[in-house]
Amino acid sequence: MEIILKQDIKSLGEKDDIVNVKPGYGRNYLIPQGFGQLATPSAKKVLAENLKQAAFKQDKIKKDAEGIAERLTDVKLSIGAKAGETGKIFGAVNTIMIADALKAKGFEVDRRRITFETEPKMVGEYIANLNLHKEVKVKVPFEVVAE
Picture (tube, rainbow, N blue to C red):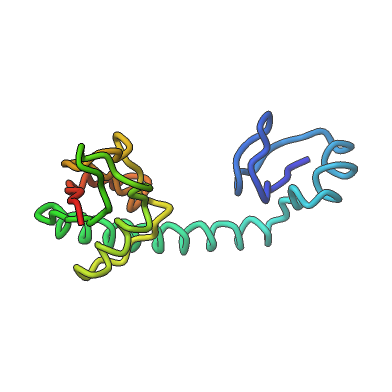
């Protein structure tokens, strides 16, 4: 029995894969739980069209991410934070602050796509990693300055 998977199943396959399973497993578990659908000829055509459109969208998203990454190579951010006499920061510099600083420079980046190589705890220079796409990653340097 051929089934088109609607989501990733660890021991079986990934979303949109066409897999062969035993009829009871397909009829009694995968289809009722919403994990798959019968792989009829019409469903296969719909799947092929959806995959083609998804590939086109992903290609466009990747090109947009590459364009943003190219423009981000020359950007240097400066983040203000309250700090003590020794240079230790009160509070924390977080991804929201980096996202706001990027927005001020004209770049719209989701804060959940930003990570730090080392957590900023002191006044100084750090690197923020931006995951714009699963294949496009950028390192943006930023400086934490005392306010």
